[in-house]
Structures are given as structure tokens and as C-alpha cells.
Amino acid sequence: MQIKLLAIGKTDHSAIKQLTEEYAARLGHYVKFDFEVLPDIKKSKNFNDMVQKEKEGELILKKIHPSDDLILLDERGEAFSSLEFSSFIQKKMNTGLKQLVFIIGGPYGFSEAVYQRANNKISLSKMTFSHQMVRVFFVEQLYRAFTILKNEPYHHQ
Image 1 (tube, one colour):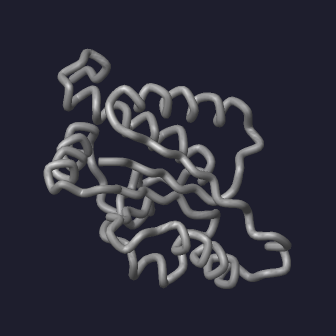
Image 2 (cartoon, rainbow, N blue to C red):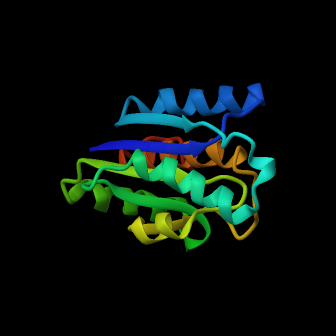
């Protein structure tokens, strides 16, 4: 199985980028992992939030294949502990799935078309984080999930 993370908009924060890249590299020991940043919408200041979500949704849906299992990182999604998330990942791997795609939306969330295409929604917390910080948090949790599955000492109970 391959795991892909799509995120809207580049980050201007070098520390966020560096940490995300570090955990992405660590993930490479366990799974084929691809992190792709989709460009910010041009002249988005001229759009209301609904129009911006629609335009971002079009970009997202162009990157999705019909066979992809699509999971949105969304504040209204299901919350997992790290152990529960590792079990979730294991179940996905057991299905023989070719590609699992996680998506971090822009600052206003996702378009209705993206919600309709999604197979699941996951929440990282009841708190709201910037869509840039979520990159680091999620990639670290994905790495943690694989270390749990391999019984490695990274995660402590």
C-alpha cells in the first residue's frame, strides 16, 4: 500500500517544512509515502470562503484516482488515540488497498464535492490547528502508527 498526503498551500515556515520532511523520511522505512503540496488559489482574497473551497476542491479531486481511499483531516471527523489510529492503518493495509490518500484542506475546509468523495474523516483534536501545523502533527502520528505496528520503542504507554 502507498500512502499519500495532499495539502493545500505551501508553508512559509521553514521549521514546519523541516519537521514534516524529517517524519516523512522516517516513514519511508515502513511504507511508500508521498507528500504533495497543491498550490494556493491565485487571487483568493477576491473570493468568499465558499468559492475558495470550491476551487481548492477542484484541485484536490484532480489528484484522486477512482480506486483511492480518501480520508479528510477534518475537525468534525472521528478522533483516535495513537493506538486506535495504528489499528485503523493496519485494517486499511489488510484490505489490499493500493493507495490511501489523506487530505489537509485550506483554511476554510473542504468543498461539498470533496466531502462527498471522501471515504472517512479523521480529527486530530477537538482543538483547531492551522492547516500548516496539521502537516507536522499528522505525519508524526502516521510515523508513530507504524512504530506501534512494528512494536518499536518510539511510542510509550
